[in-house]
Length: 316
Image 1: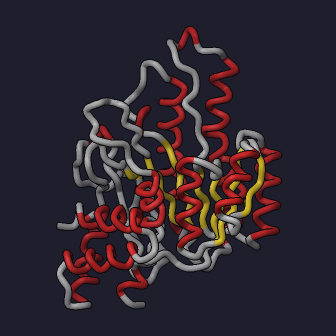
Image 2: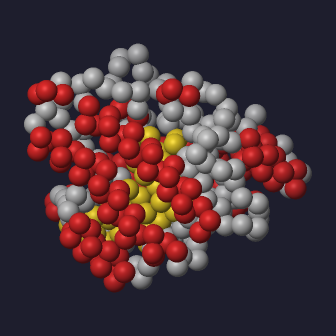
Image 3: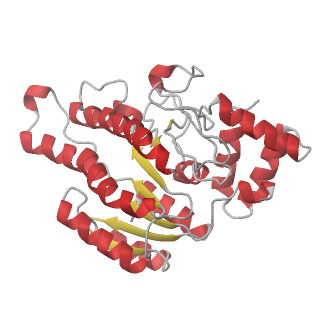
């Protein structure tokens, strides 16, 4: 495999994106579609599905409530009918949930938040894993969440609780599925609202992180969450990456920045792999990542900048 091929996602991946008809979900679905993947989305909004189909006719869709197990079963019937299997599951569905003190939160609003934000991850993972076990590509589960509730949130207790639960689910699934060669990654999408933040993270950059986690080169990104304070360590629940002759798996929480640029933490093992790759091709790390940037920008400019910066910012 050439260096440029190792920095591109595998072609013809079969991808399912939940809540994928608008917003970040649609950005991820379109990014995969642009790099040659076959993409299916589900969404509760029929009009959003219709708009996405008009913009990207290659992307198929199902109308479904991710919190209803029967709807999820129908989505997978559609996936098997249209894609013939699955290589990547992107669990993107989520709602902010009710605001207020614990004694004022309506029980039904709490249960709905847990059903959408957490139970849906279980419903989709449960149905996806048997298909991922049969994948010959880069079988992966990507869980999307918001870091807004990561340090705790006195106003949105339900949302913060489900965020912590998703992080635990990602780390636990990584341990369970790693021997099967299935990657499990979490992306915590920063949604800054404070005026001190220079800008919100672009949706294409979040899509770039999803693509980056699936590169055939197999980088293991162990991202810093807010409470990590940038320390360089691998979460204790996650084993080191496998040797080069094994199919890779592992967990990651990737937190886009609060300021100007993307920022993730990549494990020391992954950095060493990048260094070996650079030496093999007689390049410096800077030249390696410039080639990555050039390769990505020919397909998707904003995503290319995100992917190149992600790697370059850590492996200095």
